Length: 92
Image (cartoon, rainbow, N blue to C red; front, side):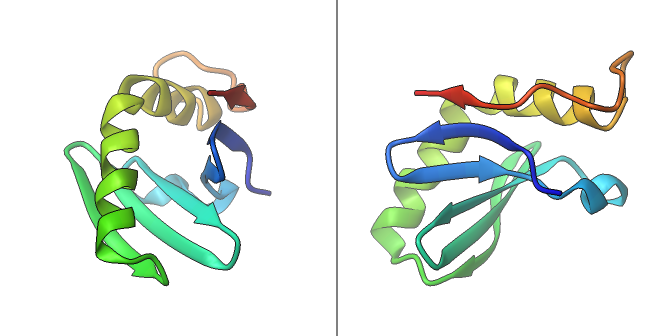
């Protein structure tokens, strides 16, 4: 399962339900391209197919929505009082 946390333009921001053991992060996909960013602090972890300019744009979007993404992470994984099911589907 990979709940969508945010959609911004052509980009889908999500995490996998199996990501619990890792530090808070988000995956970003567009078509067949995929990047992964740590959330605290925002930092690129991996990139499959995005060019440098687009990675820079994605990092800006992750920074812009960092609080929302962290909140969704903690709610989904039941950290800080969440129910472990989370909210999904924010659109921008």
